[in-house]
Image (cartoon, rainbow, N blue to C red; front, side, top):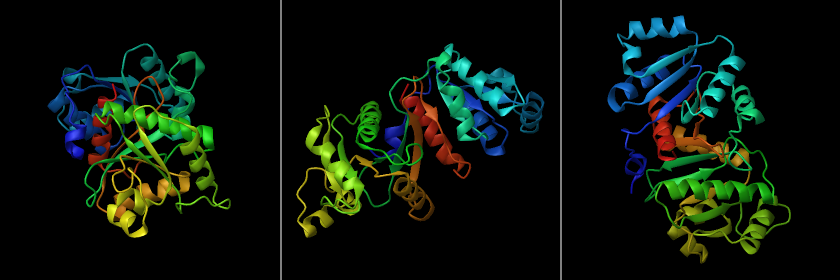
Amino acid sequence: MNFDETLQSNFNTDASIALVRAGSEDLLDLVRESALEHGIKWHLFDDERVLAEAFSAMEFDYGNFGVTIHHCTDDAACAEEAGRLISSGGANVLMKGLISTGVILKAVLNKELKLLDQALLSHVALFSLPNYHKPVIISDAAMNIDPDTETKIKIIENTITVAGKLGIKEPKIALVSAVEKVNEKIASTVTNDTIVKAHNFESAIIDGPMQYDLAMSKSAARIKGYDSAVAGDADILIMPHIDAGNILYKALITTAGAHVAGIIAGLKVPFVLTSRADSKEEKYNSIKLAIKMM
């Protein structure tokens, strides 16, 4: 399946999204469009007067289309209220709006809310690349800074879960490094080699350390004599650290014509964590991905 087919969801579900700090034109337009076209229910945590006036200017009678505004004017309070709504079952997707990542994470990691489902939160991004034959998952580009072996194993487990919900039953996973041979001076090669040799992941094929071109190009693998079932056909790229992951993420979007959908995995509900610079389309893609994870 291509990227759009992979993200297609039955929007006649009970999808209900808690959006923290919704006060931007593109976010409110996204709320309006998704509510009208797909019946998505929204809980918006922000200044009620500001949002109501914005919707009025858009000629959108939000109250009749499943949109509820929860009045709050403080970032921390908005995040906390959204977390409590999620915890109580009042919404089944969490979304970050115009609020810092640190503030919303502090709220959702409140132990009283019991929202943590896995041992680790990690960022999982589904990409459509112009010159690659299928969608590819890249992790972690936004959460874990310099994962050690155990952290990387948890990142891998989260991506396998996401892949399974996207219908990828036996994902091919490349553990990306700068070189494909173990080099003690390049920590990720040691970590990746340790994982491949010591851990078996059910229903997944994993290999590494592997250079990006080997993971994504059968031609490159053939020229370099690199024999691997993953080479040139990777479903998942596990990045060595946040520097490499974040740079690749932004380079693919900014200069390579890629499309992306991203979520945070590891909570009991999907968590849409988009960048302020992401387009409306990319934010909508991320919502679609989140709904697929429900």
